Length: 141
Image (cartoon, rainbow, N blue to C red; front, side, top):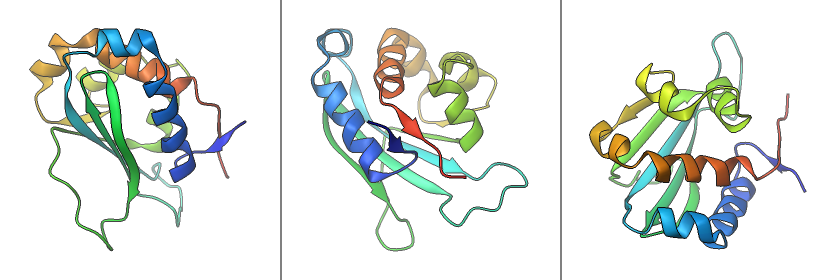
């Protein structure tokens, strides 16, 4: 089944994958930090749905909560990491066309938070992306 990206259905499906993936649980057993993914419209694109903010509460190999946050309606949580990028860059990472660590280092994915912590936990980051990528997505044009 394909899920619209980005959407509440997508983040719920990712949470299910994360919480049922033993490899992720083992690699991420020491990870402590929640994430916001701010998905911006691509340059020149007119989108009524973007920007969109996705929240992932990750703690010791489990995903405790996910949700889509509307900053105009609710308060955005204070998180350990915020990643900001146009939708095209997120899609390139999810499709395996852009290495996630390279995207962060080159600022195609702008990171707010400790880049040093991310670099010390590259396997966790890569397994998180693997789990996100395993959820089939559909893009509404």
